[in-house]
Image (cartoon, rainbow, N blue to C red; front, side, top):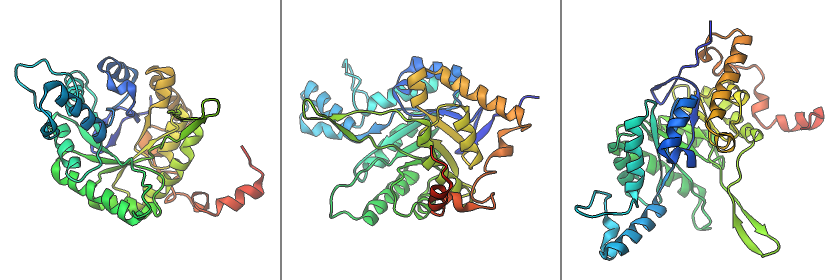
Length: 334
């Protein structure tokens, strides 16, 4: 008998454990359909970034000759006008089309910067039919007057505000740079997060030595990038047993999917793999995971989920600082 790959994430029943993360392929209806056909059990649409939306709405205001007052534009259709597909309307339009044609859950993603904006855009995405909402807390503070405590409080306030504004499941995509990860994750859940997505990747600049120019480049992940995620999933699974957990970054094969499940993830999210190899990368991941489960006599992924988390293994030192000295003395170098 074939093992059961079905799982649940954010209260949503899914056909399998692999979700297509936000990326250019989830920003087009044709490739969304291909991802569904390849076995993606849900898709996360590209993030609505507030500054990008405001810039586009400003350009639309210039085209319409409405002036600065147009910054209050809510995204509602303007009558009798061939309007460009700009602003929040672009994200809402894609979401509505995806919901019309896909059978799998469609998760909207949001990154705002100002109080009030989180609720406004979250409500628009929820009203457009999103099955769940992922808050993308992609913030890098370079102001020496802003403390880590101030930044974390603003993130928690955003989670709480969105949870009040919408009635769909809410996940929060975190960076790995919080000073006290376990504490912040627990506070995020208390503020209203139904799930946590680990981890957001910050893209860093490079330098062109010939032109002496700064370069912005999106480097795709590698399987080793999953290791920091595995550590924290393994720690958090026992601390937040009722919270949905998603692994993202470094998921390129069935092996990474299985590792994420073993330490306690409910799903594994992939973007780099499908950008490199196309939607069929998900088909291969699922086949590899199913083959391993069959070979090891698992009837379902529920049987192995969390079996190697910190709450389930006798030696938790590999999740903690003690591994540093142990690895150096072992000579087990990659």
